[in-house]
Length: 414
Image (cartoon, rainbow, N blue to C red; front, side, top):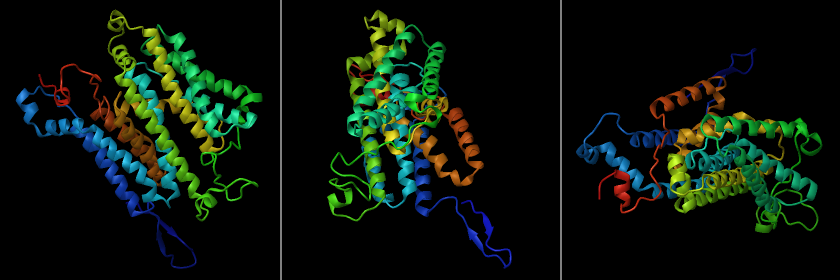
């Protein structure tokens, strides 16, 4: 525990106050638990570098735990979902904890969206923040100029972002690897420059302020003072007003949006389009020889991934109430891509762990001032050296014929 001392008054024998790095003992326990889970899963999922026999694979303690983990992925996911739903009940009075959890959930949703493009389709995208920006500005402009509510603008933001994903997909159909990364990087910068220079529409560097906050599904407003004829959230449920109501509602909103992203992704992976993404990721030439159209496959990956980025951007705009081009720089794309890569490309649970590590932990260490980024950088280097393919680097095909789930995980012969 880090402690610093401060004199209260130079005229007296100054008493000493202890400013702890963490706000409460509870946050320390949660931090240690998260850290233990991340490293435990990474350790148990690590494959040994030496050549081992089949008997060692079947009898090794680490191998057995790895098989147990991978055969119980759904149960682990359910436990994680229950924890996230119960989070406001545990930290409902801690405003900073709810804000941090909401921020982490935004990056989880962005990571799952980019995971479709990078993890499943194998297309390196360095301009994903462009779709994030399109979604945010779409909601802000539609809300201010046309008076549309958040619930109407949310699907429209996804449609606009998907359209931009298709626009980006056409020029890069014949590109791959580093060339694809350069083009997508340029696309992201083009969007940012347009937002800065189109002052009459986007407000330029000044951004857009006073963005409308979402209501409770159009039934009530979260403000203390509501206009005549509008019901407040506290009056609707007969409870006392609290500013935490809006924060908790926004947390659950982004949680539901993230879960929808995960559900759609997992369902698509089992459909022909999902298997086409995996085939494209492994070998594009073999993909063509099987009669799969790479053009449609790439466009679908860009469009669907961009759509979820647009949803996240619309939520970001309504949560912040203010957006500007400074929020959509290349650094954001790099962070989202790092979450996907560090979590393990194609792994949904890995994206969650990586988002907690990259977004949650630095914020928890904010009290450490200049040492915060040093610890963060050292942790990133350690993970990249220890697990260069990510925390959960499993790339099993979604469907294997004539193999049970246990055989698929353990690699045994039927």
